Amino acid sequence: MDGQLLLVLLLLLLGASGPWGQGPGPEGPSEELLKEEFPEEEVTEEENGILVLSRRTLARALQEHPALLVEFYAPWCGPCKVLAPEYSKAAALLAAELATARLAKVDGHAEPELTEEFSVTEYPTLKFFRDGDRLHPEEYTGPREAEGIAEWLRRRVGSSATRLENEEGARALIDAQDVVVIGFFRDLQDEDAAAFLALAQDALDMTFGLTDQPELFQKFGLTKDTVVLFKKFDEGRADFPVDEELGLDQGNLSRFLLTHSMHLVTEFNSQTSPKIFAAKIPNHLLLFINQTLAPHQELLAGFGEAAPPFRGQVLFVVVDVGADNDHVLRYFGLGAEEAPTLRFIDMDTTKKYAPAAGELVTAATITAFCHAVLSGQVKPYHLSQEVPPDWDQQPLKTLVGKNFEQVAFDETKNVFIKFYAPWCPHCKEMAPAWEALAEKYKDHEDIVIAELDATANELEAFAVHSFPTLKYFPAGPGRKVIDYKSTRDLETFSKFLDSGGQLPAEEPTEEPVAPFPETPANSTTGPKEEL
Image 1 (cartoon, helix red, strand yellow):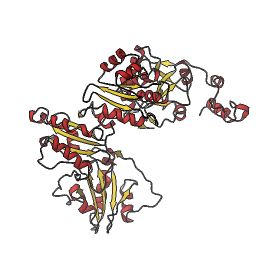
Image 2 (cartoon, rainbow, N blue to C red; image 1 turned 30 degrees about the vertical axis):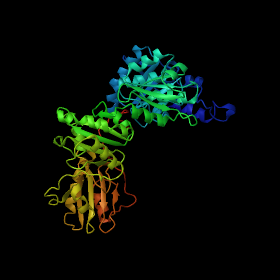
Image 3 (cartoon, rainbow, N blue to C red; image 1 turned 90 degrees about the vertical axis):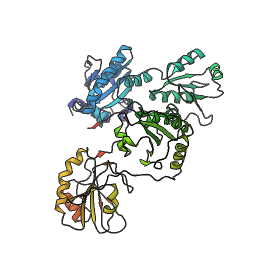
Image 4 (cartoon, helix red, strand yellow; image 1 turned 135 degrees about the horizontal axis):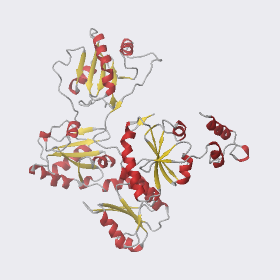
């Protein structure tokens, strides 16, 4: 820490800026003190209009720009490099609009004081500063593409909803987009209207309006405060009345808008997948068809006919097996030749369900299948590869879903299993040690060293959420399972086995793991790297 910063901290601790010498005031160091100890420097600006800030220029930038989005990045950070071109495009969009919002960036690696001040623990981290408030920046939670960044800022600098005064303005807004949300409030200054506007700030994929005009209440058949979603598909309109006693609940309204802004039947693709998973409807029914085949296309009518009663409870999704959806097929253990077929998944538990073999796909059978799954009458199925004929011929045994129970819970064996993913770098790194362990204990009749590809095999006993996952199944009754979380090397593995599934307390723990990938969805916030 350099001398100037140390002096400022000492002055703060001694109460130089607080009243009556009782400690620092709530606003932090005074402007005079900051100017004296950190002489102002000119703020550097890149050609794309992004401000380049440091601890010596941040204060000046906050004074000069009432709406400032700051990215904390590191030169070596991969996700930061991915964000960079979109961040530049967003700066250009805002500059073209003569917007008051500006974009800036801070090299967190070169400015550790700022990363500590703003509790930056991963890159990139974006924070929004309003009206020069250095103490309470807002965490950026919006998209990582240019238009999304710009729109997130527009809704904070300006109004997040268009004020509507007459029917002509309302009709124009409704006609302009596929989905438009209008809040009808008799008092635009009350808490319900404020909650509506706050929600609109982050719902960037919808257009919002609001009004207090009696004429519009009457025109749209309303007698009380109501949020109305207008859409150019399905039912055309959905109403969310505001509870007169409890007021507007943002969580309930958010779920309502997500649910009713989606088509009753949604085709899965890279554009729709983020919204499918953001809808927070855990139950998904998927119809796998080949859109190039007329008999398959004819099934869509019955699929759509069955959907309305399940609105908000089950999401109806169409997956075209002829498109780039092989990853979805693999996730459900299907081949394209098995279409047309249905699959049901509970996203909270990842349990998958299939209809009876050979059952026709009609509105009636779809409805019956959904009710049967929801009422617990259908058992989930688990993916499994076939058991290799030589699965036990090598020191390292190969397990799949079909032989896992038989081997892992053999009461005469101590079984140590690695659950891995073929693409996982941590799994590849530990592979030599795991093979060496199997070789070392190959002559121990009561010890089995095995591995299982958890991306191709699902287990009824438990779910695997990260890779590698190591579990020890000691001999004896009771189906005991011990999680191994220590160092992944031959010496420590051996100590663990020789002590019957225990390690000395001083052994290091918690090596890195790779998370199980989400079902095909796109994150709106994007990847990050920890400091």
